[in-house]
Image (cartoon, rainbow, N blue to C red; front, side, top):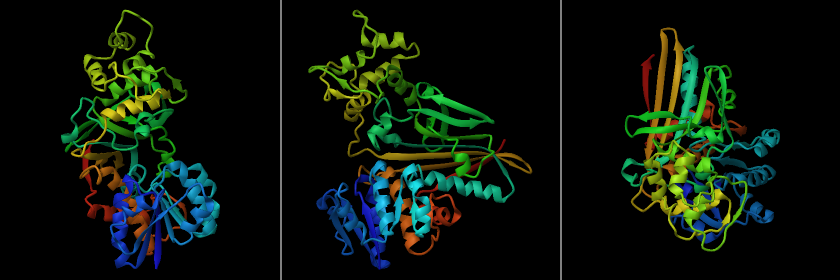
Length: 443
């Protein structure tokens, strides 16, 4: 009888938990849900007799070990920075470990010992990273098997709103961690295009855009992620002339967001300590030149000549020009901006989120060059059953199910880029209506 432990039962875990609950009776398994309090975890048990809830104290090693020792497989749905703590426990106690998050340097340092203990530590098995790897590798391996040469690979993913929920000028609301959205793109983005290495510093990122179009839901702005170069080796495309991974936002979003970047309002490197009565308008003005007789709106347009009336209207809608007191007076500019945005970009019960992903390949064949466009559009059902939770949780749940069934035999530190892992997961995802549509054209 196998026992699965899930640590972290927040919104992103709903599909993961429900999928694995369905396997408990049929496959003679037990499921343990652990959270900061037992009451929080109990809400996700669905009255299933083979599912139990426990409290876990992440700062207490003995408490963590007590929870982990009874499990065969541990799934961490905690924030990424906490994964290494659980991973070290699993390594010490000889337990298999699964996450949807990026493989960290701390995990890589454990690689030899993980392999020596014949354990599977599978990371990057969620949405992005996860479904992006698997769906891309399926095409890459298929084209290589045909003797074709991949000349260009671009991949974009975004967590956005369904068109009917785009009811504000930005056509955007927070469907995932707001802090990650506010800090997105910081650092230097690096990729290769036509054999030339390209580097985009943060202050230029939201001006270097590509339009990505979906037949079903229209156009989006695509901007590069921080590091695309490392994926040449990961995908087995070491000599490919063009490789770029990026993020999607609805067309027009990035140009408006760039105002906050240029003013320094997304800076997280220093703390502000503002006096009582400081308003949203004063907060914006604190990043602008001192011109006593000039309005904040006009100063923005003078400082950033590309700013249009439409962009000013978007910022106005956010309430950033209002004379209302700030709800937070201490914190980095990014933290204060985040609080202001959360009030305006909060999902309402009727809202539905959407995941959009597109792979763009150019492939050299014996008969010429073809373009492969592989697109995914996944819509959420409501605030609880979101497309984000579905696409993050289901690949992880399916991977654990396959592993316990003996269908994944790999061991060591892994991400889902081998056929043994990605093919059955993608096949199962199609049954959950997570399906890529492919279009092939000659160019």
